[in-house]
Image (tube, rainbow, N blue to C red; front, top):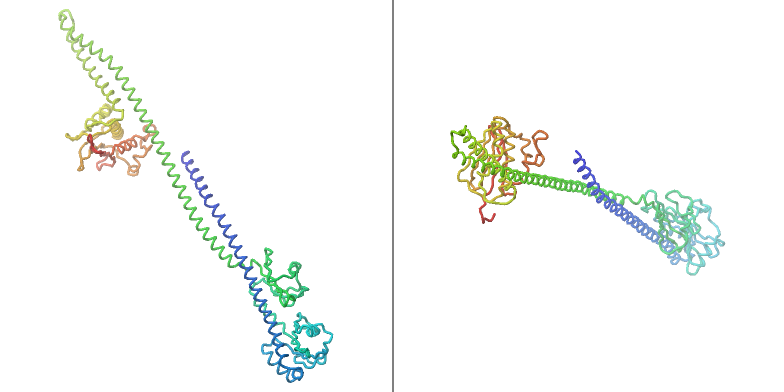
Length: 550
């Protein structure tokens, strides 16, 4: 559980690190991209607003110039005697006012007296003198005049355009409908909260504000300073474009709220955020996969390190057992040799004795034979111990599998005899020898035999068979009639530390070491349940001869 918690914590840390490595740059990229997009959108709004003001300036200038040029053309074509006639002026008015932008026409002589008038205010204007009017004096001096927009006695917003003939004998004045002029600004595409209007030099509105503003704010008054071309002012909330028109007499204002003009930016921003979000999710998924991959590699490395440690421990244990066995065998061999020598010496002395004087001569003879028999038996045991210790040194030699298996059986046959377990052999007589590590294979056979003895219990049966398959490989089968292996355990039977034995009776390393040794020796090992009950382990090993390429 502690190890599982450790790997879970490592996985969380790895995932967090990968997420930070991906999320932080993605957030920075998103903020940088959105900031640049917004700056570009604002610059685009400023550029668009500047172009709009330039265009409106051209439209207004063209409108005023058109009216002034039209009147100038009329005074150039017709003398005062012609236009001073009311019927002629009526005809001219109808010809000039087809668009409905001219309210009335005045013909005024050089003394300022009105000679003729056509329009809706004839009763109020007939006989009126303009000799002292400032605009009249300006016309006579400059040749033309365009007034500010004012109410006048008519109480209707309007402005006048007046021109004089080249000889300055009379003035032709036209009153322009301010509605037609105002419509030139109403077509400005500046958003629902935008505004456009014209003011004079004193800041007085010459056209109505789209937002109903009656007078300039203190901020807008600050933009009245005269400048050339179009000025763009961005205060963070609104963008204002101003331009002086009508020879610097009027100032055109066009304003828009930044938020109202960023609809395209918000659409682009949302698209970018969606793309970044989806990309981020994909990278986060990749981060989770990478964390899982590295954790899996770490677990594999730790597991392999643990396995190697277990193998080293097992090898050290076997080496210690081998040294202990060798020491015991040598210590026992010396007394056995002395016992053998003494028994032989006694056996040589007995024939020289007088049977009549030596009682129980036959018993002595039998005892000597029993001593020799048990010494030979003890010698066989020490010989096996010495053979086992020598085989623990890892070196390849020419091995006969039948003999090696038989030697391994001797280590378990006493326990098998105590439990009445039968060990049946079916060895192929002409089984070929192979160059391999006999000590390692003996450990494999001991593991399989010990497991089989534990599995069958009392009265069980082991079957060992050796043969050669069609490819010339050695096939070694270790079968038993025990309970077999549960199907769900077959896939992990060779995993390290996996055991089906009771706690304290197995480390779970025996079959793992068996599998590892066989693999390293170029063979394979598999396990399956027998149809009649029990399990069978099958080892397949290559036949390697001295000088072969394998």
